[in-house]
Image (tube, rainbow, N blue to C red; front, side):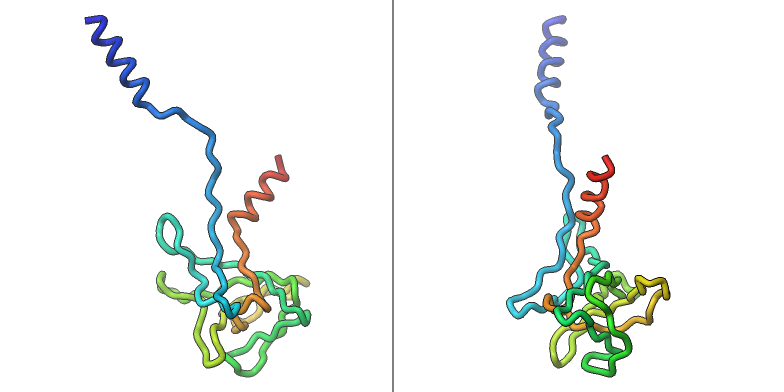
Length: 148
């Protein structure tokens, strides 16, 4: 009987996988197509789609026009270096990217870095010449490493 318990114990011990250190997964970010356009602000992850909410203004001219409608009147100018938040619709499957005749546009809400508060939602051209997606997972990972 002791041999049976010993064999069972050894079998269980061998069946349990060894705990190895693993690295946490970092969320992907939207990728621009060949024309440089972002066609969605949603990314497929291991648990379905999730929203890429933060974007960096990278306009080479230093100021990005934000419009009321695609190709519409300019309502706000966003400076390069500003971080904007994508404005997604209320439904969970909605996208912050809207299509216009000149290509995709990202609906954003900007917060004035000088403390003037949030600006009304507006549209910026969804192209890598003007904006870049930010991975909050990666940013949080870098910040937590520096804090250690």
